[in-house]
Amino acid sequence: MNKKVIYINLIVIFLSYLLLDILISNTYLNLKKKTCYKFEEFYYELKKNCKGLDKFKSGFPTVNVYTDQNGLRIGKNDKRKKEDKIFIFGDSFTFGVGLEYKDTYTGLLAKEFKSYDFYNFAVGSYSPSVHLYKLEEQIKKNLIPKKIILFLDMTDVHDEGARWVNSDSNNNPMLASNLIFNRYSKNEKFTHKNFKITRSLAHFINYNLRVLRSGKKSIDNKNTVKTSLQAGFTYRKLNNLGSHYENDIFNKGQNKIKQKINQISNIAKENNSDFYLVVYPFAETLVYGQKIFNWENFAKNLCKNNNCKLINTFEAFRYEKEKNDNWYSKLYFVGDEHFNKGGNKIIAEVLKNEIFKR
Image 1 (cartoon, rainbow, N blue to C red):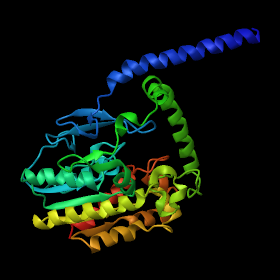
Image 2 (cartoon, rainbow, N blue to C red):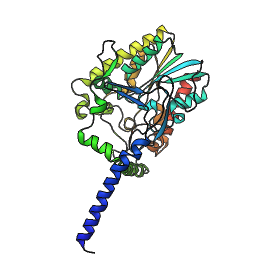
Image 3 (cartoon, helix red, strand yellow):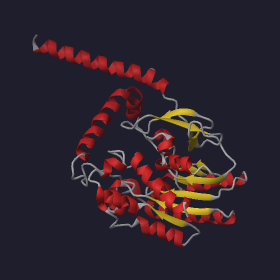
């Protein structure tokens, strides 16, 4: 067989593969995934009474998502109870991307402390502006929590400074721009829609390369631990973080966090609710430290100036890092900053001891 025939056969195989990818992406894969997300032009939330699937991104497992009559993530057979209510606020970490509900820290706590009814308001990229809005909604319905547990994420600084604005007549949070639909270019939208298999394969290869690297004893290196521009302000100067903190986004984000936490604190005080503020580390924070901006001190001062108790989980993660060479793969999804089952167990254990066993 001459080279020309080989090249033609390779081209035919390649084109056939692309056509097959397009066909499957637009039929089977498109029909198989039912999302519980409800997208509006400048806002998004979870649908009410939904049973669906969620795949955070390629390389992550597809997990089941169930929501209640309020549009909050719950376990498959969970029902609302009349017991004391625990309101939990957070973003994708607290939603529990890549995990079944039972393996999230909210799910673990709900299973152990059945005398409480856990309301998990978390959705990806929600930040204090949205937490406040959601809390106020419940208070208006006369749903008063016994405890409020708010997970403050480092990316909240960017989300408050650039993503969420209070611009409608009721001062409700809205996306600063139509980010949901305009975050991809036309070419990116085309590839996302039509080449799901290729994208998944590329992420699968990248993920497993990171897993192989994470098996080495020298886990604390730039090639393994996921770094982010949004959370890098703890150890990198702002001018090294691209456009994420340009035009005073960093200061604006900090100030809005302080303002919203103060408002949530006042609501908690007015309703005799215990208010807890929880902070946790990204893997990169454990590796590179906080030499530029100390997130733990920022959270400490928030509670010092407001009616909240700080729950700092950093020390528990530092302990795991020191005793395990493979701490990253034990606590985080490799190639990402989100906690896996191991990381969620750590969070649940700290909260159990600091909040529920007092």
